[in-house]
Each structure stands twice: as C-alpha cells, then as structure tokens.
Amino acid sequence: MLLLLLLALAVPAAAQAYLDTGSRRVPAPVRAEPRDEPAPAPIRWRDSRALGTPSAGRLLRGVRLPSVGARYFTWDPLLHRSPNRAWRRHGTDEVVRLVLRIVRDYARANPRAPRVGIGDLSRPRGGYFGPRHVSHQNGLDVDVYYPRLDRKERPPKRPAQIDRRLAQDLVDRFVRAGAERVFVGPGTALRGPPRVVQVLADHDNHLHVRIRAQ
Ligand SMILES: [Zn+2]
Image 1 (cartoon, helix red, strand yellow):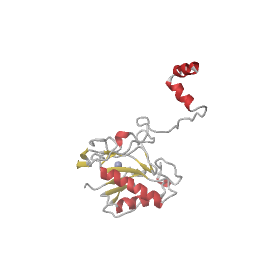
Image 2 (cartoon, rainbow, N blue to C red):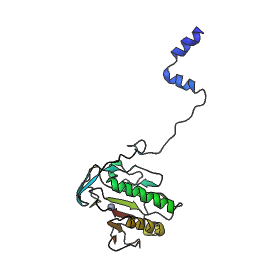
Image 3 (cartoon, rainbow, N blue to C red):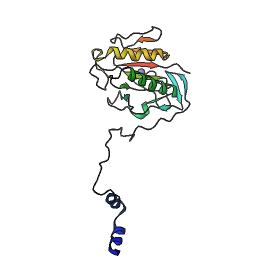
Image 4 (cartoon, helix red, strand yellow):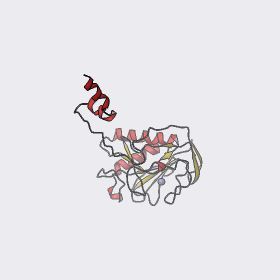
C-alpha cells in the first residue's frame, strides 16, 4: 500500500491526467482556422460611429465581423485565400448586424446555396484602405462575392461562373434593407432600382454595398 502511494506521488501531473482517462485517448479536434485567430472570436458589439464620408472618413468603435460563420466565409482579395485578415473586417455595428441578418435570411430562403463570401469592410479605425479601394473608409462599405454556379467558396473568375439567380437575390435583399448603393459589374446583368443599383467597372466578381449612415 505504501509502495502504491509513493508511486502515485511520483507520477507527474500530465501523466496522471492520462492515467485518469485510462486507455481511451481522444485526439484533439483539428480546426482549420486563421493563424492570427485560433477560433472565430465572439462579436464585441459596440455603439459605432461612421465619421466623414466613405472616401474620406474614419470609423469610431468599429465592430469586427468574425472570420467565418455557419452561413458565410470571408475572403482576402489580396492573398486570395479564406479567411480574410482580421484588420480588414471592421464595420459599424449596424453594418455587421445587417450583413449577418441578410446572410441568415438568404441561407434560409436558399438552403442549397453555398455560403456567402464576404470580402473587405474597413480597417479597425477606418481611414485609407488602398490602393484597391477608394472608399471603405468609414465602416459603411462591404464587398460581397457573387455565388458561383459550381458552388465553390471562392470569387468567380468570370461573369459566366456567377449564379445569377442567387446573386440577384442577394442584390434584392440589400436593396430592400435600405442600402444607399449597390455597385455591380458591367458583365453581371444584375438589376435593381437605378437610384441604388449602379454598374461600376471592376465589380464583375463582387458587389459592393454601401449602407446609409444612421
Ligand atoms: Zn468595395
């Protein structure tokens, strides 16, 4: 008995933990998550302010969109990979809330659709977000990739790869939600009220939504 007690005391803590579970060793789950964020961080809601204009502005108390969700993935347009880097995913609380709501409603209405690809929003405190973006400066702009016919979770390379029905559904949802502007590419044939939905070069793989400042 004394020998057993001495043995137990001699076993290091880690080994003891292993002994406690006997031979049932369960491998740790392996998750493919971004290197700078071990798991999608919960949203830290704050009362944000969009200052200035989308092309010359700042973002106060921005909210970061999580790197991935059940109904969306994020995409880094410079590194061409998912997820997008954390510092490129900040918007006003209204914008993050709206994106999550639209993505949820869209997924419910289109259960077979691939997850929605979300691109750049703004930097944590807004400001210049170039050289690819003129705007995206005050947390009100979001890039959303058109869904692909082959359902791959990546931006379409050509307009022919766009699932137009699903892409139009996304456009319609942002229009109904009161977006100030939705820019679509000249090759997409996507439509909407001309006051809101406007054709702009370099938007054949994503739409750009601008939310109205509150
Ligand atoms: Zn954009």
